[in-house]
Image (cartoon, rainbow, N blue to C red; front, side):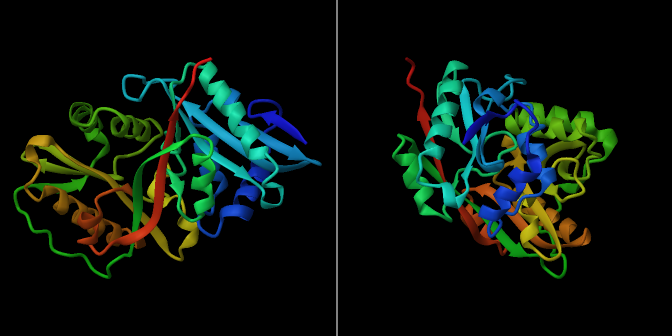
Length: 318
């Protein structure tokens, strides 16, 4: 059995995707495009803390980790993430996962990381530990990770027709390419951090703006919602598991309204606009990911779908 660092030799991408789907496709079927985006091309991937395991020429497990390498003004410093840890079922309970985690934790600590978070990374797969297998949570708890929160994904079948939007104070429409600078200025002023980073990445990768819907009060952008589908240059987390569905999947979110315009119903109006636009674009299924706003999204006909427990621990410096 051999442990190979992520950046040593030729990474067996196809084999790792096959391993993932053999173990997880019932709930989380992965595509090669998604794996490459999240675990190879992501600028924050930490190769020195990421490993795969080979036994008799077969990939039987891996761990991927990240830390903030760029745009530190927008993303948290001193944080390390375990993006994914997977061992083939037949090889579990032999200490392989523990060895991978220890290697990753040591490398992150040597890099100066103060806290390690399970999931929630830039280009994450999961916003926490999926509750599909309670043993995973127990496994991390035994290794001194503390549960800090619980979040959910929501799902609904797309409505057959658009619904009326109950506000006339604002107008809502997709961003056009020539509004890129205005929109990114709005994000910088109103939602600095991860959401701004993700919006900038979208345009850097060639996005034309159509996957963001803006709410405007007069000429001012006062809110936004993202509407993802596979035509976007970046696969958004609310459409990661599109392989589960027959027919087109649309992902709604994140959603943000400028502070001084909140509590006026504009958030509900822009979500309904996104639903209507998703219908126009042929979406048959809709997903909202990583949220605690249960009642808000239930009001649009969404129901809880996936649940995640969020874990983290502080690194002990030697």
